[in-house]
Image: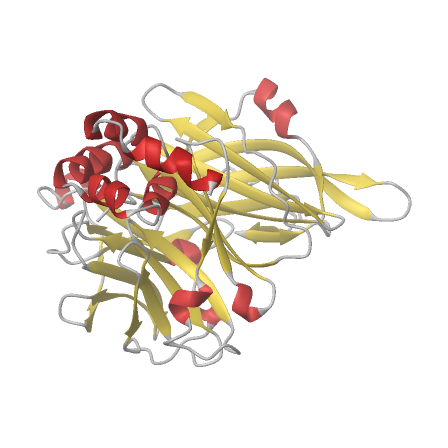
Length: 395
């Protein structure tokens, strides 16, 4: 009985004061308020509050990790730079009416309220609208059913529609008969289209004038040369082929890992995303029993104006490098750019223990930031996808 008294008293406060208090919370906490009682739910659902809430949270940056214990216990772990703790978002209940409990799911991408999964069992794509709590099966792409191993993080992009809408686009790029092709799914008509890219013959801003911010999809990530497709975010133009060369590895003759690396003698990891490349260099660590790696330096590279070269933008300052320097056996990463800021993630495993590093680089200010993350117990969890996202809104 006593447990209900604070809620009743809290509900009697003026709605304007309650809204001001609620706006200090993170979005998942606000969503949970709907289940307290009808009075609180009506305040959270008020159109003016929803507008103010979305205005505030559109600028939030999210990190999502999908983990599986037993298949029925799959959870999205989320952390935002506007909060100080991790959120657990049960996802199995949403997926249960659509897929069988034994299906093996992998988390591919997120944008706005949309989360994209692939079933490695049936090789199907599934989209989840987290706020509307709906699940949609996506028709097979023109390339046919594809399992987990077919999807490359830097070669795909999920683009949510305007806040409150139930539309999204999913783009990915592949070499088909040695020709760079872009494939795009649009939820509005539930159809795929494919476009062959054209070679680039000019500077990128001029080529895509009036096409909005550019979307970059990696097709091939080589040691010295890459193949990248660029297209305007409005989707009303033909994609262009970029073939940037990389001269910074001339003195590095050892094997290069892309996106993911075991600590077995590979001293350079290259992570691609949104037209940028993060280079992570490591040194050997030999304690007599095992041979592992330790982080040494991190650089950020970007495309030249004409898209023909990778140019170094910045190097992580030594003081920050010292803060994150640690040994690892396995390491993976992802890179995302939004509004002039590059977010870079490194997730490493050292003797069974996972560690996450979140770095941000402000291009205009030439400023690196290390975002401290609270402890996250990942021991025994089966990692099945990790990505940055933004634009999560209340509906």
